[in-house]
Image 1 (spheres, protein in one colour):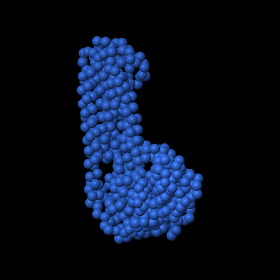
Image 2 (cartoon, rainbow, N blue to C red):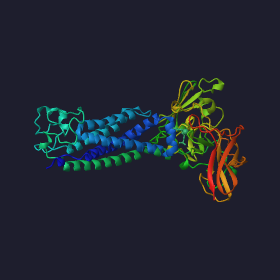
Image 3 (tube, helix red, strand yellow):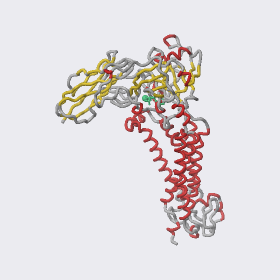
Length: 574
Ligand SMILES: Nc1nc2c(c(=O)[nH]1)N[C@H]1C(S)=C(S)[C@@H](COP(=O)(O)O)O[C@H]1N2
Ligand SMILES: [Mo]
C-alpha cells in the first residue's frame, strides 16, 4: 500500500463540508417548518442583512434585480455558506473538532439572528439553527473520521481515542486523535498552527501503521447523509407549505360585505384601449410588491387584533377583524406608489380597495389632529413582521380616504399585499403610509420616534411626487414610419393630474390626450398620436398636477424622498 492510498484526497474533505452544510440547512429548515418558517437560518440571516443593507445598496438591488432581489439575496447567502462549508470540510481533514466547531459557530450566528429578529416569538426561534448546526457538525466529524488513516489494530478510527500504534503516550489528550497527521512527539491539537507539520506529507510515526482511509465507510455515511438531508429538505418544504393553513382557511372564509359607500363606477373614458398602456386597474397578480419579508406573513384573521393607543388616545381600543367588518365599509380607487420607483419604473399600481376609514376610527378613540390641538403628529403603524411605518396624523385625518384596507380588487387582501389588514393613504409613498400585515397603531410624534425606513436614511415625510411614465412604445422599439401611438400613465395622488405633454427630440411640448379622471387619488392614462419619421428619436413626457405645478425636470435619486425628472424613451423608426 502506498502512502497515497492511505490519504483521502482533499476534495473529499470539501465534499464532507458541503454535505455537512447541506444537512445543517435542511435539518434547520425542517425544524423551522415545525417551529416558524421565519425562524429558519437563511430567512433570519437574510432578514438581518436586509435590515442592515444601506439604503443605496438596497436601492441598487431593487433597480437591478427588481422583485427578484430577495431571491438573489438568498442565493448569495447560500453561495457564501457553500464556500465556508467547503473550507470547513478541508480544514476538518486535519482538525476534525475545529471543523465541527466551525459548523456550530454558524449555528450560533443563525440562532442569534433568528431570536433577535423583530418578529421573533422567543428562544424557540433558535431551535432550527441549533438543530441544524448540531446535525451538520456531527456529520462533518463522522465523515472526516472516515477520511483519516485507519489504525491497523482497531480497524476504524474511533473519535476521541488515540489511535493505537502511535508510540507517543501523551497523544492520549482528547484532541490528539483528531488529526490524521499527528506528528509524533508534538501533541498536535486543534489549537496548533496548521502547517506545523508539512501539509501533504505523511507524518512519521503514525500513519505508517494505519491502513489508509475508510473508503467504504465514507461512501455509506455520505450517501445516507445526502438522502436523509434531501428528506429533511422535503419535509421542511411541506411543513412550511402546510403551516399557515389556519390563515389560508380564514382568508377563504372572509366574505366582504357590500360597502356602505361604494366607489363610483370607473367611467368608460378613464380607460384607454391602447395596446401597451398600463390597464387602469392593476390586477392583483400584477401588482408590484415591495417589502422586507423573506417569508410572507400568513396571519389568521380570526386571531388577528389591531391595537390603537398612544399620545392623545383618550379611549385606546383593540379591534378584531370582525369588528372592522361590522363597521361602515368604504370602497375607493387609490393608486399606490413606492418611493424606490425610478423615473419610468414599475413600482406603481392602481387598485380598488375596500376598508374602514381610519380618520373615523381615530376620532372615536378621541384622537385629534395637530391642527385641532392633538399632541401626536405621527401615526406609527406596526406589522406582525416588525415593520414600522410613520404617517402624518394631519394627513390621515384631513378628510382624504386614508383606509384600513381589508379588500383589494374585489377579494380579501392577498397575503403578499397584507392580509388581513393594511393601511392605504392616498398621496403618500407606501413606506410612509401603506403598512401591510398591520397589528398596532401608536400615536406619537415625529420628534419622539423614527420608524424603520427613516432610520435608514429616508425622509420622515414623503408625499408622492408628480410623475409621468411612457408605457408605449417600449425603449428601443423599432416602429415603422407614420402613425405611432405614444401612451402611458401619470399620477399625482390626492392632487390630481391636469395635463400631460409630450416632446419629440428637442421639439415643442405638445399636449397629450388625457383619459377621464376617475378620482384625484388615481393615476390617469394619456395618449399622444405621433407621426413618426425615419431615424432615431427621443420621446419625453411630463405631467402637470392640479396645483398647477409642472413636473420638475430636475433629476433626483429615489433616496431620500422619491425620484424626480422626466421619463424619456429612445426609439428607432424604420
Ligand atoms: N409590513 C410591511 N409593510 C409594508 C412594507 C414592508 O416592507 N413591510 N413596505 C412598504 C412599501 S415601501 C410599499 S411601497 C408598500 C408596497 O405595497 P405592496 O407590496 O402591496 O405593493 O408597502 C409598504 N408596507
Ligand atoms: Mo416603497
